[in-house]
Amino acid sequence: MTNTLFEKAKPILESLQSHNFQAYFVGGSVRDYIMNKSIHDIDITTSATPDEIESVFEKTIPIGREHGTINVVYQGDQYEVTTFRAEGEYIDHRRPNEVYFVRNLFEDVKRRDFTMNAIAMDMQYQIHDYFHGQQDIADKIIRTVGDPSERFNEDALRIIRGLRFQSQLGFELDIDTYNAMEQHISDICHLSIERIVVELKKLMLGNAIKQSFNNLRQFQAFSYMPFFKHFDLSKVTIEQPMPITVFIALLKVQQPDMTSNISDLKMSNQEKKYIDKVVQIIEAIPKVQSKAQLKLFVYDYGKEDILEVLSYADTLKENQIAINSPFIINSRAIVEMAQVLPIHSRKEMDINGKDILALVDKPSGPWLKSTLREIECAIITDEVNNYKPELIKWVKTHV
Image 1 (tube, one colour):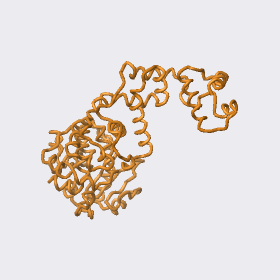
Image 2 (cartoon, helix red, strand yellow; image 1 turned 135 degrees about the vertical axis):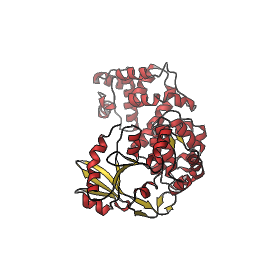
Image 3 (cartoon, rainbow, N blue to C red; image 1 turned 30 degrees about the vertical axis):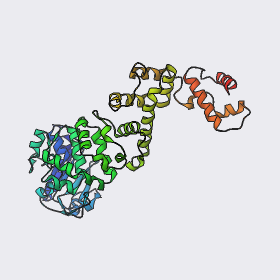
Image 4 (cartoon, rainbow, N blue to C red; image 1 turned 90 degrees about the vertical axis):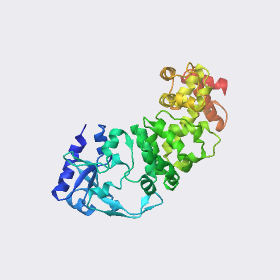
C-alpha cells in the first residue's frame, strides 16, 4: 500500500488534533488505500466547524463553506477539510434542505452512500469502519450504508455512482441495493444532466463496463436522461471501455433518424466537435475503396483520431455499424499512409487563393474554395507536386 499522500497530509490532522478537534481521512482515498490502489485525492473530515478550521490554519479557501468544506493550503497543496455533518430532508431526490454540523464521526459517515466509502482512518492508520465496509471490499460487494431505498431517495445520483463504481471496480451489487436502484431509477429525471454526465464519463471508461452498462439498460436509466431518452438503447451493446464521446457518436451513427440535440448534454464545444468528427470518421470508413481514397481519408481526419476509432471496430460491428475490410483499412495502413502524405494541412500548399485569382479572370466566390479543395486533393493523391510552378500549370489546365 502506498501512503505517501497520507504522510504529506498528516500535519493537517496533527494541527486539528492539537487544537482538541477530531480529524480523520475519509472516503475514496481510504477505500483505495485498503484496496492497494493508487490514491489521487485525499479528503479529511473533522469535528471542527468551518470557523474553527479557518482559525487553525494560516491559509484557507472557503470553497464550500455553507456545506462545511474549507480548502486548507499547506506546502503548496490543497486539502478539502469538511466538518462532520448531518443532513435534513432531501428535495427532489438531489439535495438536502439543510446541512447541520455535528461533533460525532458516526453521525457523519452514516449519511454517506456506500459502505466502502464510509470508512474513516486516523493518522496512525487505524480504521474506523461502522458499516463493515472493509468486509464488503473483501467480498467485492457494493452495498449502501443503511436502507438503500432511503439512500437513493435522498440523492438519485447515488444510483449512477453505484453503477460507476461497479464499472470501475468490477464489484457485484448487493441484491437489496440492486433492487432499490431499479425501483428508484426514475428519480434521476430530477438530477441536472451535468451531474449525470460526470458519472457517465467515468462509468464508460471502467474495465467492467459490460455488466454496468447492462444494468443501465435493464433499469431503462437512459430513458430518464436528456438526449439519451431519444434513442433505443436496447439495440446497443457495449462490452469495452470507451470515452463517452465515442459512445455518443456510436448512437448517432447507429440511429441517425432519432431526433436529438447534443446540446441537451451541456458538454463542452470541444467535446461536441470531437463527437461530430468521430461520426464523420465512422461514416467515411466504408467509402474508402482505393489507395487514393485512403490517403485523402488519413489527410482529412488525422492518424490519431482514425486509430482511436479503429480501436472500437469490434464494438461498432457488434452494433451493426459497417466497418471496411481490414485489408483496406487497418492500423498499419493508416500509420504508413500518414508517413507518406505530401502535406498535412492546407497551409502547407505552395499556392493560395490570391495566386489563383491572379491567374484567372474571374471574381472571387464559392468556386475558389472548391478549387482550393481540388488542388489539395490533387496534391494528396500525387496528381501534382506541391511546387508552385507545377500548381500554376495545373490551375491553368483545370480551372
